[in-house]
Image (cartoon, rainbow, N blue to C red; front, side, top):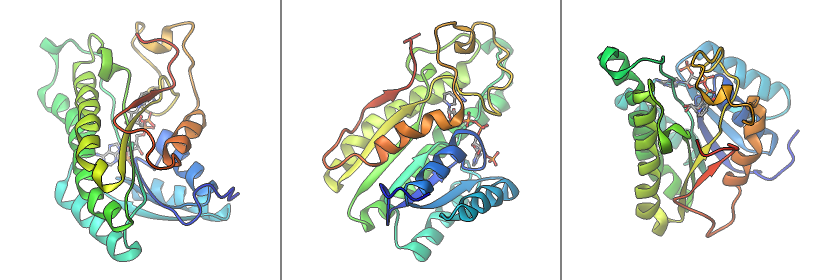
Length: 246
Ligand SMILES: NC(=O)c1ccc[n+]([C@@H]2O[C@H](COP(=O)([O-])OP(=O)(O)OC[C@H]3O[C@@H](n4cnc5c(N)ncnc54)[C@H](OP(=O)(O)O)[C@@H]3O)[C@@H](O)[C@H]2O)c1
Protein backbone atom coordinates (compact mmCIF):
# COMPACT_ATOMS: atom_id res chain seq x y z
CA UNK A 1 0.00 0.00 0.00
CA UNK A 2 0.90 3.68 -0.32
CA UNK A 3 2.94 3.81 -3.53
CA UNK A 4 3.26 7.58 -3.12
CA UNK A 5 2.07 9.21 -6.36
CA UNK A 6 -0.67 11.03 -4.45
CA UNK A 7 1.13 11.53 -1.14
CA UNK A 8 -0.27 14.55 0.77
CA UNK A 9 -3.13 14.93 -1.73
CA UNK A 10 -6.76 15.24 -0.71
CA UNK A 11 -9.01 13.40 -3.16
CA UNK A 12 -12.80 13.61 -2.96
CA UNK A 13 -14.63 10.78 -4.75
CA UNK A 14 -18.39 10.81 -5.26
CA UNK A 15 -20.13 7.48 -5.66
CA UNK A 16 -17.41 5.87 -3.54
CA UNK A 17 -19.74 3.38 -1.86
CA UNK A 18 -19.43 0.75 -4.61
CA UNK A 19 -18.42 0.03 -8.19
CA UNK A 20 -16.05 2.30 -10.09
CA UNK A 21 -16.04 5.01 -7.41
CA UNK A 22 -15.04 2.60 -4.68
CA UNK A 23 -12.24 1.20 -6.88
CA UNK A 24 -11.01 4.74 -7.58
CA UNK A 25 -11.14 5.53 -3.85
CA UNK A 26 -9.04 2.43 -3.07
CA UNK A 27 -6.63 3.27 -5.89
CA UNK A 28 -6.14 6.86 -4.72
CA UNK A 29 -5.64 5.75 -1.12
CA UNK A 30 -3.15 3.14 -2.32
CA UNK A 31 -1.28 5.94 -4.10
CA UNK A 32 -0.99 7.83 -0.80
CA UNK A 33 -3.97 10.21 -0.90
CA UNK A 34 -6.39 10.96 1.88
CA UNK A 35 -9.70 10.01 0.30
CA UNK A 36 -12.98 11.73 1.13
CA UNK A 37 -15.72 9.31 0.15
CA UNK A 38 -19.17 10.62 -0.80
CA UNK A 39 -22.40 8.66 -1.51
CA UNK A 40 -25.87 8.17 -0.05
CA UNK A 41 -25.36 4.86 1.73
CA UNK A 42 -23.62 5.52 5.05
CA UNK A 43 -23.24 1.80 5.64
CA UNK A 44 -21.52 1.10 2.32
CA UNK A 45 -19.34 4.20 2.69
CA UNK A 46 -18.27 2.99 6.13
CA UNK A 47 -17.20 -0.29 4.51
CA UNK A 48 -15.15 1.57 1.87
CA UNK A 49 -13.44 3.61 4.59
CA UNK A 50 -12.88 0.56 6.80
CA UNK A 51 -11.28 -1.37 3.92
CA UNK A 52 -8.98 1.56 3.08
CA UNK A 53 -7.93 2.19 6.66
CA UNK A 54 -7.38 -1.49 7.42
CA UNK A 55 -5.00 -1.59 4.44
CA UNK A 56 -3.05 1.33 5.92
CA UNK A 57 -4.68 4.18 4.00
CA UNK A 58 -6.53 7.33 5.06
CA UNK A 59 -10.19 7.95 4.29
CA UNK A 60 -13.33 9.59 5.64
CA UNK A 61 -17.01 9.17 4.77
CA UNK A 62 -19.59 11.84 3.95
CA UNK A 63 -23.13 10.60 3.42
CA UNK A 64 -24.68 12.86 0.80
CA UNK A 65 -27.26 12.75 -1.96
CA UNK A 66 -25.64 14.69 -4.81
CA UNK A 67 -29.05 15.77 -6.11
CA UNK A 68 -29.57 17.76 -2.89
CA UNK A 69 -27.75 21.05 -3.48
CA UNK A 70 -28.13 22.13 0.14
CA UNK A 71 -26.61 18.89 1.41
CA UNK A 72 -23.81 19.07 -1.19
CA UNK A 73 -22.93 22.60 -0.01
CA UNK A 74 -22.98 21.47 3.62
CA UNK A 75 -20.67 18.51 2.95
CA UNK A 76 -18.15 20.59 1.02
CA UNK A 77 -18.22 23.20 3.82
CA UNK A 78 -17.50 20.43 6.29
CA UNK A 79 -14.59 19.20 4.14
CA UNK A 80 -13.28 22.76 3.93
CA UNK A 81 -13.40 23.09 7.73
CA UNK A 82 -11.83 19.67 8.36
CA UNK A 83 -9.17 19.56 5.62
CA UNK A 84 -8.73 23.10 4.28
CA UNK A 85 -9.59 22.22 0.69
CA UNK A 86 -9.23 19.40 -1.82
CA UNK A 87 -6.69 18.72 -4.57
CA UNK A 88 -8.70 16.39 -6.78
CA UNK A 89 -12.46 15.93 -7.19
CA UNK A 90 -13.51 12.69 -8.86
CA UNK A 91 -17.16 13.27 -9.74
CA UNK A 92 -18.31 9.73 -10.41
CA UNK A 93 -21.72 9.35 -8.72
CA UNK A 94 -24.30 8.26 -11.24
CA UNK A 95 -27.28 6.10 -12.02
CA UNK A 96 -28.30 4.18 -15.11
CA UNK A 97 -31.66 4.10 -16.80
CA UNK A 98 -33.86 1.19 -17.76
CA UNK A 99 -34.14 0.68 -21.52
CA UNK A 100 -37.37 2.48 -22.47
CA UNK A 101 -38.46 4.44 -25.50
CA UNK A 102 -38.95 8.08 -24.64
CA UNK A 103 -42.68 7.94 -25.39
CA UNK A 104 -43.15 5.32 -22.67
CA UNK A 105 -40.67 6.79 -20.23
CA UNK A 106 -41.55 7.74 -16.67
CA UNK A 107 -40.98 11.52 -16.32
CA UNK A 108 -40.05 11.18 -12.65
CA UNK A 109 -37.40 8.54 -13.35
CA UNK A 110 -36.12 10.44 -16.41
CA UNK A 111 -35.69 13.53 -14.26
CA UNK A 112 -33.95 11.55 -11.49
CA UNK A 113 -31.34 10.24 -13.93
CA UNK A 114 -30.54 13.71 -15.25
CA UNK A 115 -30.65 15.17 -11.73
CA UNK A 116 -28.08 12.64 -10.50
CA UNK A 117 -25.71 12.41 -13.44
CA UNK A 118 -25.74 16.04 -14.58
CA UNK A 119 -27.10 18.27 -11.82
CA UNK A 120 -25.29 16.23 -9.15
CA UNK A 121 -21.99 16.72 -10.97
CA UNK A 122 -22.77 20.41 -11.43
CA UNK A 123 -23.57 20.88 -7.72
CA UNK A 124 -20.38 19.08 -6.70
CA UNK A 125 -18.15 20.88 -9.20
CA UNK A 126 -19.60 24.23 -8.12
CA UNK A 127 -18.91 23.42 -4.48
CA UNK A 128 -15.46 21.93 -5.20
CA UNK A 129 -14.00 24.92 -7.06
CA UNK A 130 -13.44 27.12 -3.96
CA UNK A 131 -11.83 24.16 -2.17
CA UNK A 132 -9.51 23.50 -5.12
CA UNK A 133 -8.57 27.18 -5.21
CA UNK A 134 -7.66 26.99 -1.50
CA UNK A 135 -5.00 24.42 -2.44
CA UNK A 136 -3.69 26.56 -5.34
CA UNK A 137 -5.48 24.60 -8.05
CA UNK A 138 -6.15 20.95 -8.80
CA UNK A 139 -8.04 18.47 -10.91
CA UNK A 140 -11.67 17.74 -11.57
CA UNK A 141 -12.37 14.41 -13.24
CA UNK A 142 -15.96 13.73 -14.30
CA UNK A 143 -16.95 10.17 -15.09
CA UNK A 144 -18.85 10.33 -18.34
CA UNK A 145 -20.01 7.79 -20.87
CA UNK A 146 -19.69 7.01 -24.54
CA UNK A 147 -23.49 7.40 -24.62
CA UNK A 148 -22.95 11.09 -23.86
CA UNK A 149 -21.06 11.39 -27.15
CA UNK A 150 -23.13 9.22 -29.48
CA UNK A 151 -26.37 8.43 -27.62
CA UNK A 152 -28.33 5.23 -27.63
CA UNK A 153 -31.97 4.40 -28.41
CA UNK A 154 -34.05 3.63 -25.32
CA UNK A 155 -31.50 5.42 -23.13
CA UNK A 156 -32.47 9.04 -23.70
CA UNK A 157 -32.21 10.11 -20.05
CA UNK A 158 -28.78 8.60 -19.51
CA UNK A 159 -27.46 9.75 -22.89
CA UNK A 160 -28.74 13.30 -22.35
CA UNK A 161 -27.33 13.45 -18.82
CA UNK A 162 -23.87 12.38 -19.97
CA UNK A 163 -23.96 14.64 -23.05
CA UNK A 164 -24.63 17.52 -20.68
CA UNK A 165 -21.78 16.38 -18.48
CA UNK A 166 -19.39 16.40 -21.44
CA UNK A 167 -20.39 19.99 -22.25
CA UNK A 168 -19.99 20.88 -18.56
CA UNK A 169 -16.42 19.54 -18.72
CA UNK A 170 -15.56 21.70 -21.70
CA UNK A 171 -17.14 24.94 -20.50
CA UNK A 172 -15.84 24.58 -16.96
CA UNK A 173 -12.34 23.71 -18.18
CA UNK A 174 -12.09 27.10 -19.88
CA UNK A 175 -13.55 28.93 -16.89
CA UNK A 176 -11.16 27.55 -14.28
CA UNK A 177 -7.93 27.14 -16.27
CA UNK A 178 -6.74 30.51 -14.92
CA UNK A 179 -6.96 29.02 -11.41
CA UNK A 180 -4.71 26.06 -12.29
CA UNK A 181 -7.66 23.69 -12.23
CA UNK A 182 -8.05 21.12 -15.00
CA UNK A 183 -11.36 19.46 -15.87
CA UNK A 184 -11.43 16.26 -17.86
CA UNK A 185 -13.85 13.47 -18.67
CA UNK A 186 -13.10 9.80 -17.98
CA UNK A 187 -15.16 7.36 -20.06
CA UNK A 188 -14.91 3.88 -18.54
CA UNK A 189 -16.68 1.92 -21.26
CA UNK A 190 -18.52 -1.20 -20.08
CA UNK A 191 -17.73 -2.13 -16.48
CA UNK A 192 -19.41 -4.86 -14.46
CA UNK A 193 -21.04 -3.06 -11.54
CA UNK A 194 -24.34 -2.83 -9.70
CA UNK A 195 -25.49 -0.36 -12.40
CA UNK A 196 -24.87 -2.67 -15.31
CA UNK A 197 -25.29 -6.17 -13.91
CA UNK A 198 -27.06 -7.72 -15.69
CA UNK A 199 -26.89 -5.64 -18.87
CA UNK A 200 -30.44 -6.08 -20.11
CA UNK A 201 -30.23 -4.31 -23.45
CA UNK A 202 -29.01 -6.75 -26.15
CA UNK A 203 -27.77 -3.82 -28.26
CA UNK A 204 -25.66 -2.42 -25.41
CA UNK A 205 -21.87 -2.22 -25.55
CA UNK A 206 -21.83 -5.28 -23.29
CA UNK A 207 -23.00 -7.29 -26.27
CA UNK A 208 -20.31 -6.05 -28.67
CA UNK A 209 -17.82 -8.87 -29.01
CA UNK A 210 -14.76 -6.70 -29.43
CA UNK A 211 -15.59 -4.41 -26.49
CA UNK A 212 -13.49 -4.59 -23.33
CA UNK A 213 -15.83 -5.49 -20.49
CA UNK A 214 -14.03 -4.43 -17.36
CA UNK A 215 -13.94 -4.85 -13.62
CA UNK A 216 -14.05 -1.57 -11.65
CA UNK A 217 -10.33 -1.92 -10.84
CA UNK A 218 -9.51 -1.68 -14.56
CA UNK A 219 -10.62 1.98 -14.53
CA UNK A 220 -8.19 2.97 -11.77
CA UNK A 221 -5.01 3.46 -13.88
CA UNK A 222 -6.74 6.07 -16.07
CA UNK A 223 -8.20 7.80 -13.01
CA UNK A 224 -4.72 7.97 -11.47
CA UNK A 225 -3.25 9.19 -14.76
CA UNK A 226 -5.73 12.09 -14.82
CA UNK A 227 -5.24 12.79 -11.11
CA UNK A 228 -1.46 13.02 -11.43
CA UNK A 229 -0.96 15.01 -14.63
CA UNK A 230 1.60 17.76 -13.96
CA UNK A 231 0.87 21.40 -14.81
CA UNK A 232 -0.33 22.52 -17.25
CA UNK A 233 -1.60 19.09 -18.33
CA UNK A 234 -4.65 18.35 -20.44
CA UNK A 235 -7.95 20.06 -19.79
CA UNK A 236 -11.37 20.03 -21.43
CA UNK A 237 -10.54 16.59 -22.84
CA UNK A 238 -12.26 13.23 -22.92
CA UNK A 239 -10.28 10.09 -22.12
CA UNK A 240 -11.90 6.79 -22.98
CA UNK A 241 -11.23 3.13 -22.19
CA UNK A 242 -13.56 1.98 -24.95
CA UNK A 243 -12.43 0.00 -27.98
CA UNK A 244 -15.11 1.38 -30.29
CA UNK A 245 -16.63 4.80 -30.85
CA UNK A 246 -20.13 3.34 -31.14
N1 LIG B 1 -20.55 0.56 -15.26
C1 LIG B 1 -20.42 0.99 -16.52
O1 LIG B 1 -20.41 0.20 -17.50
C2 LIG B 1 -20.28 2.47 -16.78
C3 LIG B 1 -19.98 2.87 -18.09
C4 LIG B 1 -19.84 4.22 -18.36
C5 LIG B 1 -19.98 5.14 -17.33
N2 LIG B 1 -20.26 4.71 -16.06
C6 LIG B 1 -20.39 5.73 -15.03
O2 LIG B 1 -19.56 5.39 -13.94
C7 LIG B 1 -20.09 5.97 -12.74
C8 LIG B 1 -20.13 4.92 -11.65
O3 LIG B 1 -21.03 3.91 -12.04
P1 LIG B 1 -20.91 2.38 -11.55
O4 LIG B 1 -21.00 1.53 -12.77
O5 LIG B 1 -19.77 2.23 -10.62
O6 LIG B 1 -22.31 2.22 -10.78
P2 LIG B 1 -22.70 1.73 -9.30
O7 LIG B 1 -21.90 0.54 -8.93
O8 LIG B 1 -24.16 1.65 -9.30
O9 LIG B 1 -22.20 2.94 -8.38
C9 LIG B 1 -22.84 4.19 -8.43
C10 LIG B 1 -22.33 5.02 -7.28
O10 LIG B 1 -22.97 6.30 -7.33
C11 LIG B 1 -23.58 6.55 -6.07
N3 LIG B 1 -24.77 7.37 -6.25
C12 LIG B 1 -25.86 7.11 -7.03
N4 LIG B 1 -26.78 8.06 -6.90
C13 LIG B 1 -26.28 8.96 -6.00
C14 LIG B 1 -26.76 10.14 -5.42
N5 LIG B 1 -27.96 10.64 -5.74
N6 LIG B 1 -25.99 10.78 -4.52
C15 LIG B 1 -24.78 10.29 -4.18
N7 LIG B 1 -24.26 9.18 -4.70
C16 LIG B 1 -25.00 8.51 -5.58
C17 LIG B 1 -23.88 5.17 -5.50
O11 LIG B 1 -23.93 5.21 -4.08
P3 LIG B 1 -25.28 5.26 -3.20
O12 LIG B 1 -26.28 4.38 -3.87
O13 LIG B 1 -24.81 4.77 -1.87
O14 LIG B 1 -25.65 6.70 -3.19
C18 LIG B 1 -22.66 4.41 -5.93
O15 LIG B 1 -21.60 4.63 -5.04
C19 LIG B 1 -21.47 6.53 -13.11
O16 LIG B 1 -21.37 7.92 -13.31
C20 LIG B 1 -21.77 5.84 -14.43
O17 LIG B 1 -22.66 6.58 -15.23
C21 LIG B 1 -20.42 3.41 -15.77
